[in-house]
Image: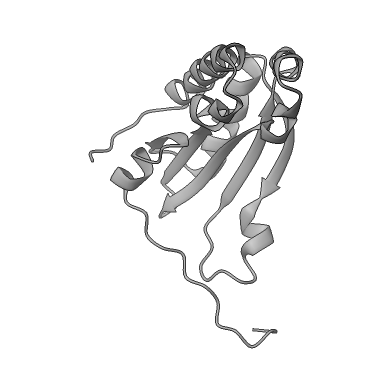
Amino acid sequence: MENGKDKREIPNQNYSESMNTRYCVTERYNLTFGEAVKNVKDQLDRLGLDIVAEFDVKEYLGVIMKDMPKHLILLVCDQDTAADLIANDIQMGILFPCNVTIKEIEDESVVEVSMEDTSVTWSSSLKKDVEEIAKKTKENLKKVLDNIGQTNFKL
């Protein structure tokens, strides 16, 4: 490697660990990475959520991470929700847009999709109106997970 360091390893993350991450809601699917990206984008569009940016983690970290799998982060927002957040707490701009990740897990046939749990990440505001907005946003994002494809995994 150019800087003389060995490439860092990607740890294996078991499904139980993924499912119990406090700040996100996660599901695994029997889909290719491409199918999952298309299905997630279609569901976000169906719900009227805007993808304001895409970040290819493999492209960015692949030079220093050994065997980096396909990994995409979508930054997702809704103008009305963002306006409500800012109207209630001007500092909430630091916490949106929401993150949605799509990661290839194994053999190009299993992907993991995670959605930010806004009821956790936005709770630092401590404002009741923000709490309500966060709850609605989480419910909306959860609809995306519910409609991506078949899940066939056991913990």
